[in-house]
Length: 118
Length: 112
Image: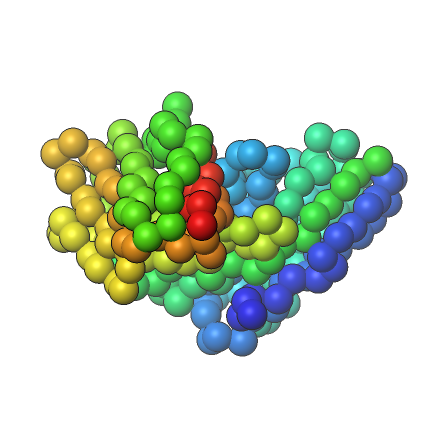
């Protein structure tokens, strides 16, 4: 069982909908990440939060809005998405201080939310 | 510009034999390398990692080798088991960032 829990597992939404993806970890990690993975492609970094503050935004369109309410929770708010945004959205956490990856601080991934935009 | 490359999309080996998965990188500032395994409909699972100050790290059936001069790393699985059948991603990080760069992945099939 993964220690990073993501809900929902599947989500279908229209282009005018507003929805949110949720991620929770109880490993005491202070760095949390959102990745996006398209079919047959590697995961691509979207956002990094360190100590509940956004530290990296990989030039992600504003229709994706991350939020870190506390050290255990990470949300991704979705609004006015496009069909090409359909993908697997992965949340991860790491014990890496400041979110800076170092040896023995691997990312731990959740099982993802499979998003389909119609 | 793909900084981490896995040039073999797929690999098939017989159960009990060695599986060798390869990965090349271009950024000499990378100092932390990881291998992840991914089953369908699941997130990537961390397998093993290596720091740039080492050339080998071993954990049970899994060994990662790093050749810094060639900018190449490999994952050896011995003996291979059918349950090892999955997509394997090589990943790298460095320059004091929180960014983990993944390769394209190699699909390993271990035949009984």
